Image 1: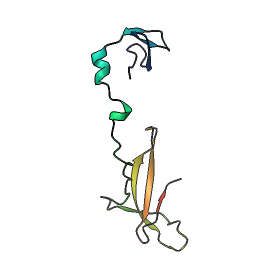
Image 2 (image 1 turned 60 degrees about the vertical axis):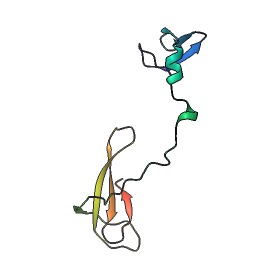
Image 3 (image 1 turned 180 degrees about the vertical axis):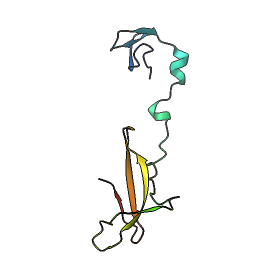
Image 4 (image 1 turned 45 degrees about the vertical axis):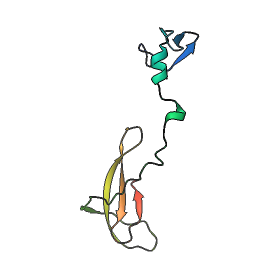
Length: 105
């Protein structure tokens, strides 16, 4: 995959040239560089990403009522996790009594 040096868009091949469909920038193709590019067949799947444990390394608790129907606890561990895309963080809670997990809404 080749990215345009001018605008950062993905470039497409047309004969012996890489062409950017966004800004019409053109670059010559380099067979050695293309041979070194990783293909989907050459990539490996490491499995699903691990899920963050809100209690790992957390010793602080806060007053937060557990939403589980059979739990009357008002204390929970919490952790701040970045939201995908990086726009803001989400607070994840884990009940100290029943280990029920939920996020701040």
